[in-house]
Image (cartoon, rainbow, N blue to C red; front, side, top):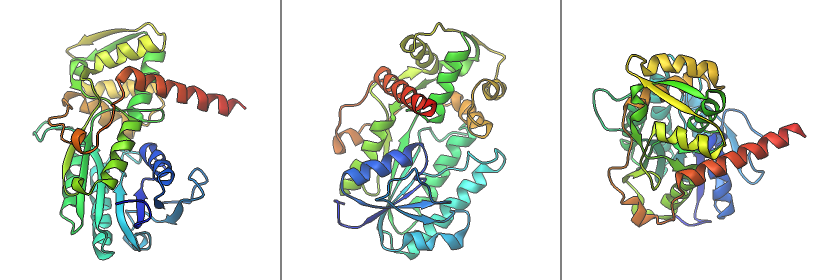
Length: 308
């Protein structure tokens, strides 16, 4: 799809990824509509806003009228922890029905990496279930599966930032050695836009990650070095991710409904198993260190704005 060929719908438009994606699409000349629970002044004036809630099926069809391609970027972890899988399931089902009825041509979904095993965390299992629900629709679904996304305002970044800032010594579960493939938020947005432009990505599933594979321990140690902090990490065998999630909730401002599923997902290795997306949407990937520097600079800029 090229600019001017149709209207693009962004769900989750006020979120960590959605807000950046809306700006990128507008800058590229696309017509953008945002499905929002409540109209927001934070979104650009050029973006059309339609109020609706994916958990309220009657509010969704209006947003789908005349849509060619829709981005599905929502999740229910920001609400209460209990029942987020059911909320995700219902939201995806309502979206899929409305998109089918409106004859939407394509859907692009940002989900999570993780192998299909009995030990998959609740969060990653829910992301996989949503992908399967969307792929059953009559539209063509592109699925991007990402691991840890590094960017100011993102839950994973904020957890690491506050842990490193406030805890010079960390007692961590043994899963802190689990490998992952972090990716810069700007690279995620470029992949999303690239999939929109590239019709050869329709109907496919892609793993997306940065250029490095790191353990969570290495990520925190390198974050500490970049931000000028002293950080010692002591893994212990008796501290489970669930127990860790409780003190993460005390130390960081990230909501427990978000931090707990993310921490519990530490046991799952999340690295790319294929790299075919790099051929279809080529780019120079941002290193982890550079992604952290960019995020810290953005955080500092936002904090300075708040002081004025």
